[in-house]
Amino acid sequence: EKGLSLVHGYSEDEGKAFLAEAMSRIAGVPGVRGVSAAQRMPFQPSNSWTFVVPGTDYAETGLYTGLNMVAPGYLEVMGIPLVAGRSIGEEDAPGSPLVVVVNRLFADRMWPGQNAMGKVLPFYGDTRWTVVGVAENSLYWRLGEDPVPFVYFPIRQLYTGRMTFHISTASEPMAAAAGVERALRGLDPNLAIVASTMRERVDQQLAGFRRWTWFVALF
Image (cartoon, rainbow, N blue to C red; front, side, top):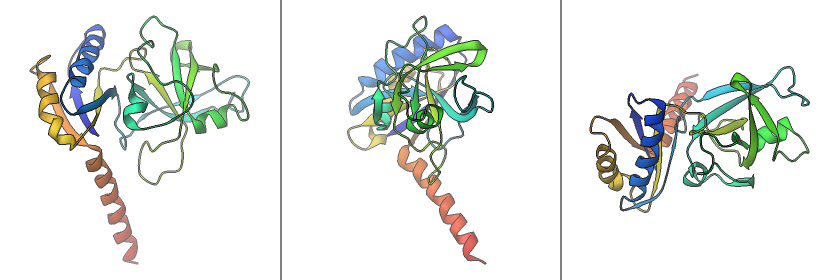
């Protein structure tokens, strides 16, 4: 898998239009099997929120949770299985009912012994978001972390101007990089683009573990 980070000064409407067209163009690049987008990459500090939900054990203290804004196909591209329901899809657009996908740990903690599907999460600005899917737990911030509660929001319903395209490929990830970059620069030649592979991000995490092990071994 490869990540392409983009930073550019679009309005919200322009950004949403760019996202849709860019994903369409990237999907047509030879060697690309799947494409999605998200605000944050794996092993990168994510946004967080403390969800206070009436009628649960977290009605007062809240449940501290990581979150990410993602485009359609994100779970599939990242290889994160669904436990129940569906993933973020094309139907989760502006003007449509507000929806989220939660991970299994979030569902188990917030609604133990219950079906999370159809439950409602209060969020910023008194908005209400309905759970349409439960995803398997994954790694979000670092290798070796304990499972953490996590929520995925549709990027087109909770827009962010900073996004990273997540791309799965049929062969060596960087082999498709030039074609993907050409597709994006055909939309905007002034984009700032930084490409990296998942292997590189994992290696960075492993390097941190090796440094820590070496440090401990000094004692």
